[in-house]
Amino acid sequence: MNSDALIALVKSFLDPATTAGLVLIPSIFTVYMIVEGIKYFFYSEQEKEQHPFMKTLTRALLVAVILFSLTAILKIFGINV
Image 1 (tube, rainbow, N blue to C red):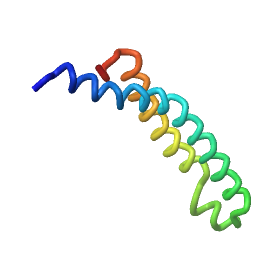
Image 2 (cartoon, one colour):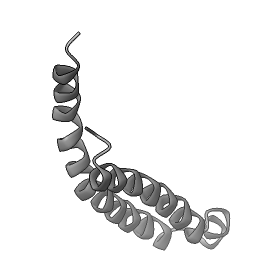
Image 3 (tube, rainbow, N blue to C red):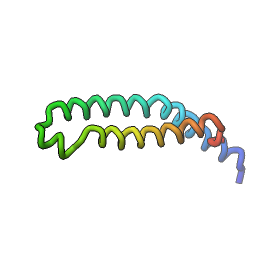
Image 4 (spheres, helix red, strand yellow):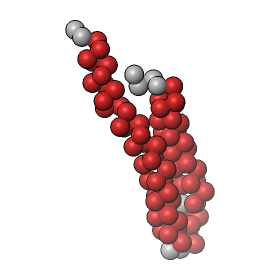
């Protein structure tokens, strides 16, 4: 088995994915939070109590930070060799 060819194949998929992740993750997070903010604005008072915006924001931010951190670490340290 040719390990150099396997590394090149994996690298050919991971390099564009990490680059796209660095752009797409913050963009998707921003759009998601805008949509959730608009939905929250039109909630009734009872729905606002049941679905607090800060809880939604915290969850989305946590997911975005974890995904972006993994992508950035892969890009910085070149783990995707």
